Amino acid sequence: MLHRTFIVLFSLSIMLVSFVVNAQPKQKNEGKPKNVILLIGDGMGLAQVYGAKLTSETPLNILKSTHVGMMTTHSSNDEVTDSGAGGTAIATGFKTKNGMIGMTPDSVEVPSMLDIFASKGLSTGVVVSCAVTHATPASFIAKDVSRNHSEAIALDYLNSPVDVVIGGGLKHFNKRKDGRSLTKEMESKGFVFYDKLSANIKKGSSKLLILSDSVHPVKMLEGRGKLLPDGTQIALETLGKHPKGFFLMVEGSQIDWAGHANDSAYLISEMRDFDETVGVALNFLKENPETLVIVTADHETGGLTFPHGAIKGTYRFDFSTGDHTGIMVPVYAFGVGAEAFTGQYDNTDLIRKIMEVTGYKF
Ligand code: MG
Ligand code: ZN
Image 1 (cartoon, rainbow, N blue to C red):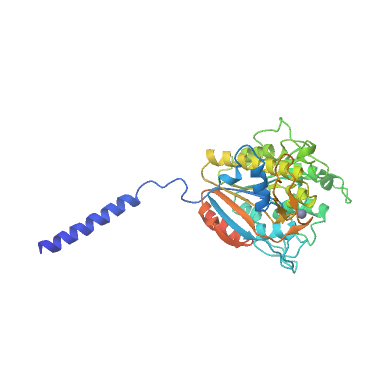
Image 2: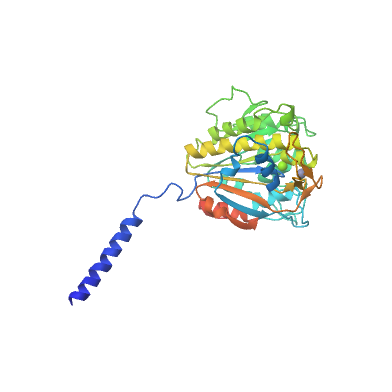
């Protein structure tokens, strides 16, 4: 009898201890992120990241990630994707044919994660270092059979729920065949419009349209300056005020163009700009721990390699192609929910993982 009482008491005390342990306050990385920042380096394979590391005197922000995954990137009709199909797979979770935007291969329009987050009441934005009508940002905003329909894609911005838009592409909004001024039409929908990134951006406006260039902003090597990191900072200050949280997509657009050009100096300067922008997102995460930051790519460009002596002095890397390649790309995750992004998966799985950790249905 005494023996049995002891066992019961012992079990009860074990239960009590485990209850007390479980009742400890949650660590800050538990729970669901309120904000999602997705940074896409267009054409940024592992070699591009490593090349930036090799040539940088300070540690890369990207490589501070403790949760890393790998994504396959093929499109519905090719082992090697373009940025339209690659962006669409990431943004919507559907494979499509190279050249298409926001649609399945049989031209059925599908919502992007920006559309989905906006429909849940979050604020949303895109910040890029190309025309905002270009394939990657267009994948989050537009639905079109061709990534080249720049004017139709600009019109999709007018009808998108997006709140903050920063990049180039003014021509496609205001010098159109249909004669419309989409910047005026967006102003009448509540956007504050600027034709450059200036210090006088009105704080407090919740809808911002900044189109800094007629088509594409220039290269870093030609003096683009801080468009991407400062644009990202402005977007975070604007979207960060929203009580329900936000989704922001940021693209280092010209990493890809440097790869196509097989230009090492161009590549490194664009990678540095992108990594500095990742730093802006990580600073936001430090101040706002209820945030998930994902850094990834739509595909690799250039087939970049590092032969002996490649980095001595002049940074002359080797490229095996002027095109995209079909190699897997890395995914670096930070903040709440980062654990979900380790392992090996397909680019169409990224949206499912993001929706799962944020607690929204996909
Ligand atoms: Mg792109
Ligand atoms: Zn490309």
